[in-house]
Length: 199
Image 1 (tube, rainbow, N blue to C red):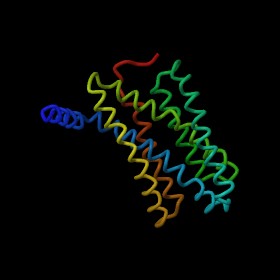
Image 2 (spheres, one colour):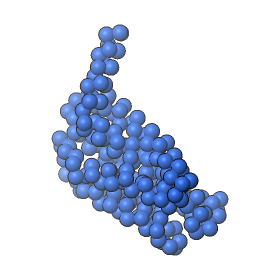
Image 3 (cartoon, one colour):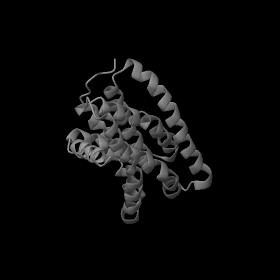
Image 4 (cartoon, helix red, strand yellow):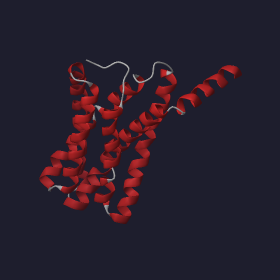
C-alpha cells in the first residue's frame, strides 16, 4: 500500500508540472470564480446602483440567472453536436464579456436582462473546459480530473476579491475584475489543442 501511495503521489507531481494541466486548472478556477462572483453580487449591485429591493427584485434576477444557466446548459448540448467546442467557447465567452459590461455600465432596464444573460452564456464553459482539458492528454485522466475539479476553489476566491475591491473602489470596479477570468477563458478557445475534435 505504501508503494502504491508513493506511486500515485509521484504521478500527481508529474502531472502538476505539466503547463497544460496548470492552464486548464486555472480555466476551471476562472469559470467558477465568474459564476459565483456574478451570482453573489448581482443583488447588492442592483441595490447600490439602481436602488432595487434585494429581497424582491434582486432575488428575482438571481433566480433568472440560474434559470437561464440551466437553459443554456441544455442548448449547449445540442450545439456541441454540430459546432466545434472551441468555437462555442469563444462565442459564448465573448457574449458573456459583453453582457457583463452592459450589466455594469448600462441603464437599469438593460441590466435586468443582461445580468441573467450572463448565466446563459457561461453555462457551457464548465463542460467544454473539462472536455478540452481531458482531450488534451492521452493518459492520467483520473488524476487530471481531480486536479481540475479542485479548481472550484475559484468560487471562494473571486467573490472575496470583488468584495475587497468594492470596499476600496466601489462594487462596479470590483465586479469589473471578473473580466480577467473571462478573458482567460476566452483564450482557451484559441490555444487549446484537443487530440480529437468534436464534429
